[in-house]
Image (cartoon, rainbow, N blue to C red; front, side, top):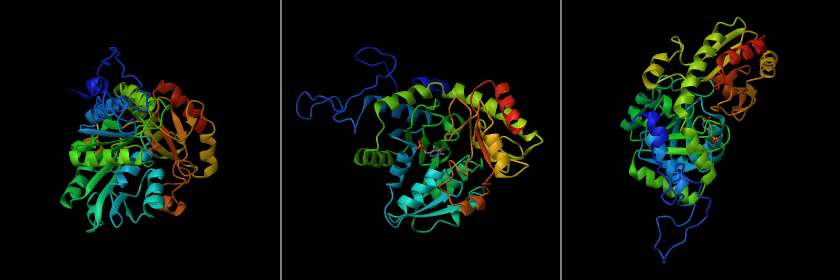
Length: 379
Ligand SMILES: *Cc1c(COP(=O)(O)O)cnc(C)c1O
């Protein structure tokens, strides 16, 4: 089955009691047993919920995995993956990470004795040098947030396999429409389903997908033991969202391409970060591992200061100034003060994240209106 068909049909079946084509929202905390221990596979709703099951199965199918394990947010999913580790274990993570991921690693899990090294992974070979006998996991995002760096998933997966460590890929930015990390050798795929999977800026949700039974059972154990489960209504919203992922992503990609070129040709714009440009440093890898380049991009102004950036940020009408990404509506953001404020300034600058950098999540509106909006705001 191809992706567009899977997005609509995988994991779901008409409700057996009524024939409802959409999986109902099973808003219940428990299930009645006909005799002690005799039940229909559902005992208590932290452990199992039919709405969640449908979504977990759908996500497993669209990421070409065998099991989906869902959580109340993307960071709750990250929290669960980290709990596969024990004190003394080490993680090699990319240095260009979502701010909240950096925060949970350094402020929460370092206190529990897990060590993190943050490494530039644009050259995949550099990862090997940071692996020690204690390394248990490699963690990467690609494209990265907000600089749209591209990391070669297959090359890092080879290093992970050679060293017997797990590779976790945060696939939030690309979505399963653009790339499938499990096919490239990753062990774990993570999503903030809050973004493209949900797609309508109306739900916070996280998911992990794996293709290994033992890993899946460990993660289900953590999901049930730690309890960061999503509610059934949120599962329903994500399930509805993914049914249009392919058509939304197609438009995100088309609009993204036009806006990236518009910005690049604008005389007040300095750098534009978008992996679809043939002179993007890792464009060849993007072309190989992705099926399109998406609607996420960042840019700086020639007038490189906060005031100029602020002028643009406060003058768009269709691009709303907000954190988050991946919804149908276009958003504009300022990583240094918003999504990446939890990363210390020296660390940000060292990684190339300028104070004046502006990030766009290009939505699926009519692209001519989006371009006109940016044009008047840039001035
Ligand atoms: C938003 C985001 C997260 C965190 O997800 P939440 O659903 O907000 O908890 C993790 N990784 C990336 C790349 C994100 O954009």
